[in-house]
Each structure stands twice: as C-alpha cells, then as structure tokens.
Length: 142
Image (tube, rainbow, N blue to C red; front, side, top):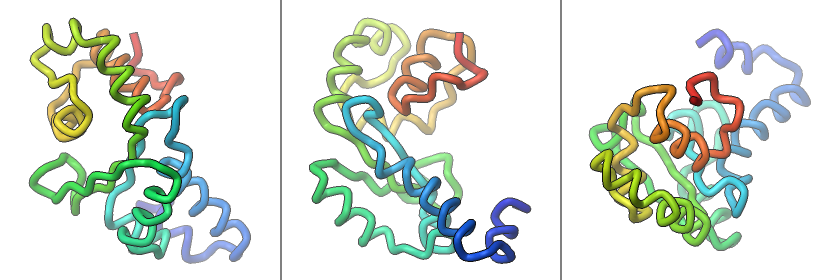
C-alpha cells in the first residue's frame, strides 16, 4: 500500500517509469510471456488509464484480453488479463496431461478463469502457471 501511495509524492519522471513498469505486465505479453494481468483498480487509480484504452492498445498488437469481475477472480475489484492466444495455447497443450491430472482446463479462457483456484507452490502446476506469466524467478517455483 505504501508503494502505491508513494507514487503520488514522486517526481513525475520516476512516477512515469514505475507506471510504465506496471503496464509492461500487459504490454510485454507475447510469445515469451503468454499471459499478463493487472488489477482494474491499478489501471484506473494508479496508472490512470481506462481498461478500455489499454484493451484497445493490446488488441492492436494482436493480443486477446479478458476482463474478469471481482467475483470471477481472486483480485479485489477484478482484473484485466492479456494473452497471446497462440503462445498460451501451445504452453497449455504441451502440458495438457499435467492439467488434466490436476483438474485444470487446457483451453485459454477457461484456464485464465481457473487461476482463482490456488495452486500449491513447489509443484509442476505452479511452475506451469509461473511459465505462463514468464515468472522465472518466482520463489514458489519447484
């Protein structure tokens, strides 16, 4: 919370850098990072962009988006997900056996909606989810 508040007291150049870094979780989605998300409230209150405008930007890059409401995700206020349709599906298809064993869907949108379900750390499933977000340094990885 203090990090969010500090944005209001930083010099404009530093604030822009930090906001750009947050937005990059969506903007860097592609073959190497098939999935990204930001809370809706972060987009509106901190980044000062509308979900519609960032969705439009992402669609122009050929990415798909999925906006989930509060009750559909574990992100307070809901979240905007961006995904590379081909890259994410390839990742899920490659790990289809693991997903089926764990009771997870292997199609893009159902998989994203299923992220509300907790995955135990230090498991192959946790690694797969981290891979979807290109989070190679996550301490919960196996």
